[in-house]
Image (cartoon, rainbow, N blue to C red; front, side):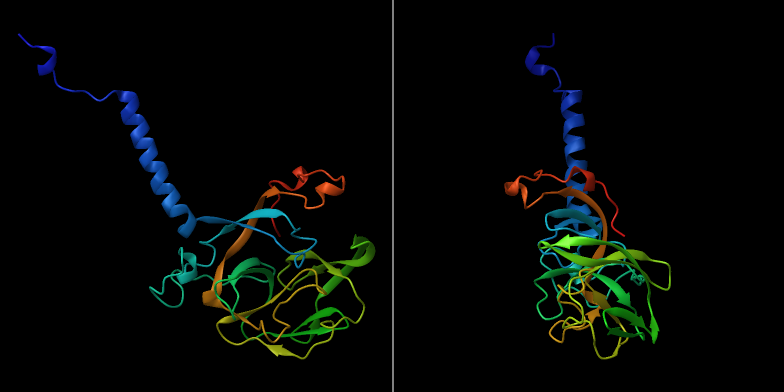
Length: 241
C-alpha cells in the first residue's frame, strides 16, 4: 500500500510556468540594458526643439556595435568597438563626454571622419558647402522669439534647429577637420549647446558612442507648476529624427 508520504512529489504546473517565465525575464533584463536598449532623460535645452527638458527616451545600444561604454560601469575589458557600424549624418547620439567619460551627452552627428565643418553667420557649412536650411515660423524661448529652421544634410536627414541670437558666440567658427575615428556633433539649439565647436568638448571618439536615440517613451513638463499639463502625452511614442 502506498501512503501519502510515499507518493512522488510533483511541482504544480503553474509554479513551473512562473519559475520559467521569471528566469527568462531575468535573463532578458540582464541582456537588454548592455546589449539592447537603455533609457535616458533630457536634463537641458541643448537639443530643443527635437528633445525637450523632461523627455525620457530609449537609446539603441546595438546601432553602432559595442564598446566598453556599452557595459554597466564601463569596465576596461577591451578597447575600440565590437561589430562596429558607423553613425550617419543626422543621427542623434548619446555618448560619453570626451573630457569626463562618467558623463553622458546627447547631440546630433553632423560631421564624419575627414569632413570639414564650419559655422558662418549661424549657418552650418560642410566641406565648404552651406547645408540647406529653410526658415520656419519663429518659436518662443524664454519669453522671446527664436529663429526656427529646418536643416537638411547631404544624405537627406532633416531636422529642426533654433537660433536664439544673431551672430552669437558660436555662430562663426574656424574650420574643423574631423580626424579619423571621430565625429563632429552639434546641439539643435545652436546658441545654447556645448558641443564640438567648443575646445573643452572637441570631437567625439567612435569608442565613446553609447548608442542612437530612438523613441521618446515619457515626457514630463517641468513647467507644470505654472499651470501647464504635467505630462506631454503628445510626445510619448515619438521617433527621434
